[in-house]
Structure formats: structure tokens, C-alpha cells
Length: 434
Image (cartoon, rainbow, N blue to C red):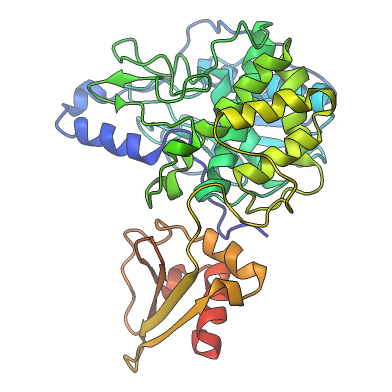
């Protein structure tokens, strides 16, 4: 079961977007206005491969309506638009990698057609998978280039779709950081595949070429050396970590998913280099089998996933185990997805209150997660502090407040309550939640 509605897994961390927004608040609008309707020649030409899932690239024309106008479909000639052609080439290459190297047919392994949208929003600094579409902004022309330019951005977002249709890792805290890391892993594999590089030859950068030349950034993330991808007056310094000793506990960024993903990212890099040869054929195959095979639960921790990779590594088991140990994760053979974390212990009590309504009465309740069924912990992990951000309550309707030890309260007006939030409220409040 997945969140309702499907979360948007943005490529750029929200804390970085906030910083850029603040830094650019006083910029002249005329300097930043830019439209990436480019007619220049398309430099990275990749063949459209037959026998795979169908795809269509749409144009949102600077709006946020999805999917937009269809511009180019599989088998059609290049369009007079570089972003469209980059998206077309990128999805062709990504589908080919998953089909030829992993035996997977599209993101659902059932040949689902892929919908892509370019020119989303105006000066939009992000890319995301929303559960139905791969969506790419043009960038603002000051900090970011268009998000179709580095092919690994597209592969990263497509990988989120694959993860959604395999383990369904919840997008929060440690499982969310693992989700982000796996998306980076397959993005790196695609980039190295296209460049014909071995693990030792690769630069291990995610999003290289995404930033404008004036920005002091080699990329958005460095899988080999987390925390070193950028250091710039506009962006600040890369805050990603690469060892469990530095694990960041925060309510921001869905529990630090983009910050702590550097830990499993570095483990993959170390394993790939130790195994040698192609990252895709070595560590990449092991990581994919751990994701797509049986046993990985939606609330899996780094330790859970590490144990699965060691179990599937065969003759490379020692190299994989050592890679995880070098980032402070000790693989074991617990039940994957049990929720026991190598990070700081998860909260044990959840409190829910329901206020407002015509009668103006408040009902409260609290439960110890240890006394509840495993579903309760999964629902708590799915709590998103941004689920109702900026949404005011409506007259005479309820407002629910969810409080979990160690996290800020999450207040949700009744009209924004998802089926999963209602389920959690009912478990805590009983019939009062209905």
C-alpha cells in the first residue's frame, strides 16, 4: 500500500531549494525569466531502442498541468526542442538498461508505458516522479540548468518508480534515505553504462552539469565522497554525510532522506570498486536483486538492506560486507523491514488529537507502538510534516494533530486527511476518529 496521494520525490532537496529561493528573492525578475525552448542541436544522441515499453514526452508549456501536450513518442523523429529530445534519449537508455541488464520491463515489470513532461512550471528548479509522470523543470538559468540535461537525473526519477513498484520504501527517515540512495545507484549505473566506464574510472557524481558554470558545484551529490559535491555562496556547503556516526536526526527533508542517503551511497561505491569492472554488472546487479527480490519490507533500514545485499552477493559477499562496515553499518540476518534501525532508535509513542467540529470538542489519545500491530509503525513512518502545509482548516471541520516523540507536531485539516492518516487516527482514537 502506498501513500495517498503519491508523494513527489523531488531530485533537489527541499532545504537547498529554500536556500536558493531566499538568496534569489531580491533578484530582478527580468534577469531570471528564461524559457528553455531551445532549437540548438541535440548533442547526446542515443538510439530509440525497440522491444521495450512505450514512452511519450509531453510539453507543459510553462504550466503545472500534467501531463501536457504530447510532443514526441517512441519511434518518432527528434523534435525541434532540446529538452524533449534529451528526455526521449534518456528514457530510451534507462528502459534499455533495466530491460537488458536486469530483465525488467518498464518500472512495473509489466511493460507500462512511460509518461514524461518537460517545461514544467516557470523557472522550475526540480524534477520528480509523482506516481504517474516523470516531470522536469527548465531550471532558473541562474543556479540550475534544465533538469533533462544530465541523463542521471531522469534515471534517478525513473528508479523511484521502480522502487515504488518493488519494496515500496516509505519516504521518510532511514527507509526514505535508502529510497533516495537506490535511485542514485541506478542513476550512476546508467551514466557509467553510457560512458563505458568501470567503477574505478567513474567520477561518481550525481547531477554533474546540472548547475550553471558560475556556481561552485561539481554536482548535486558525490557518492564516493558524500559532503564534497558543492561549496558555494549561493548553495552553501554540501551537508550530506557518509557514515553512521554522522547520521542526522531531523524533521526537515522528510527526516533527512537526502542528507543520510550518502551513507548507503558510499557503501555502494566502495562495493563497486572492490568488486571491480562495471558497477552495473557487479554491485549494481546485487543491489537490484536485493531490491526486487523477496524480503525487503517498506520500512527497511540500512542494516536490513545491507544484509540482503550480502546474502545475494555470492562470491563477492566479503567485499559487500566490508563496504557496509566501512560506513558504520553491520549487516545481519534479521527479518528485513522489521523496522529496527542502525540509526537512533525510532519513537515509541504516538499521540493523536482531534479538535474543532461543530461542537468544538477535543478528543485525544496515545498508544505505545510496541503494543500495536506492525502496521502502526509503518503508518507512523509515513507521517509527512508537509502533507497539509499552507492549508487552512475549513469552518466546522475537524483538525487532527499527530505527535510522535522527537518530531514536531503534524496538523492536518480534515479535508487533507488521507486514508492512511485516517487509519492511524482510528488506531489511536478508536471510533472517535470517524
